[in-house]
Image (cartoon, rainbow, N blue to C red; front, side):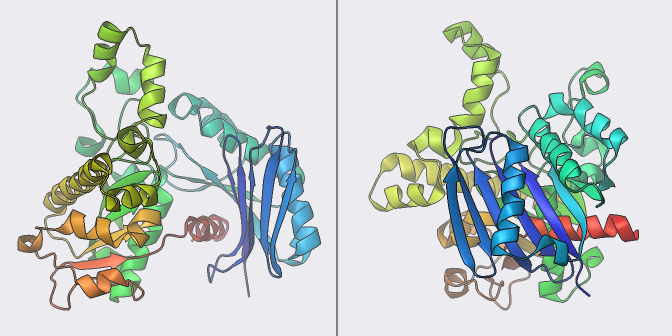
Length: 396
């Protein structure tokens, strides 16, 4: 029997939704409402009989979710007949309070509200999505699934920064990590592809989209990850710088009179590939590189060099590595990035098969005799949220 979960991901100006079978991962329908609060919003619904677009003003998240419900009613499938067992919500930051998904109640709402200073751009939107969905679906259980939860297993020496000891206690300054839902899903899928148990496998997962993060997963448990207090730390991303000297803030304040807020905005929204090339889309960077653009070539080299450094670091952390897994948009679709990031790592037992890398349809892109398997696995965060939501209800 199918157990469908309505998965909701509320962003600051968008609302993404999907009706997912928690057992099979099949999405009966999905959709996205963009540009919420603007003069003209865009809504696309992917239903059983095709895609349907609608452009009209959507003033807030409540109106967006109401539009989604109308789309289900009009284009299918019927929510009342879908056998929905829960509404699962993506919540970006759970701090150190949530190491697992949790039923939504007033206490959870208060706790996530307290965590807003750690994720001021994300948690308020997540909370708004939860509140709206609770009003529209009052008879269904609601479950919060946290991006940070999977990384709550990091040991203290991995999550503690070398800063004054009062900072963690007073301000929550520590490594939290993000993309945890994706890392959890992909590391488990890697075990299935290899016919192994997750507890017997050491994996390096590289989630490479517009946001990028790496994770070292030992026996199904995250032991280190590249993102930190915020999603800014770590790998080079579409618009985020990743690792840099923290003194940059002070230096710019002294020499340019630039405020901390402006520097923070630029490091998050105007840096990364966009800062290096003017384009945040990796596909555009590849196109520019193919046309001989020197900035694009440098950006590509920086991006892949940073990847290689993290692969080497996490190899050292894990001691032995069974698999390296690429996922998300760039990780799944860029054979060039995979090849460049792994070039020269053959002495570590990492052997890429060029033909398989060009066509990763069977997931494995390493040579048959490669001691470390190289995998390309599409992530499915909606399915993971659905599975975790059902797990909360069943105690599984």
